[in-house]
Image (tube, rainbow over all chains, first blue to last red; front, side, top):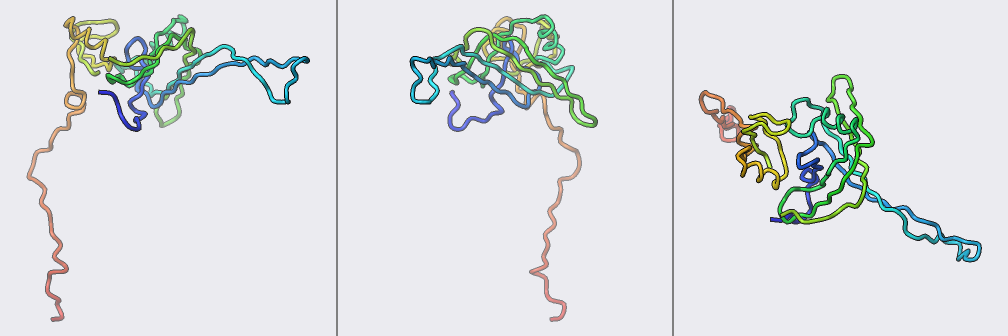
Length: 139
Length: 69
């Protein structure tokens, strides 16, 4: 049954190839589009910028706690993917039937492991999309 | 969906309890590679402590007779 009302952010996760990534503490998906200025000397316009549409792109990012023995995608798995420049199938979803999801292919373009004294080791990864994002409904 | 791996699959060895998408979990369960588990019951079960049940002490301050009376 699809989720209703205000959705708890805890439930929305990034899956890599169907498996959750690490012990996540936050996840995000962002879309952007470049623009092309259509300003010419012949069409100076009214002083306001006028644009045409350009390339669309997306990035997924996540932060998670470091653990060697997580059954989810672990920090070493992600390093291997980064090192091998592996294209990853990523899905941003609650994994609840009836809920919408976003899915696309991306590469790890940023990966950081931070180990402060007397605190949890944390990791952060950014996946830059390659190609289109598709949206669908979990069945 | 939380599952328990019953047969080696990818990086998972029997006993591993990954949290995977339902669609994949159903395939693994159908193939006998995994079984569905309840993470609350099987992963974080709280063991009850033995011993007598705690007793509630009622403070009868307002019901007690005043010493001066």
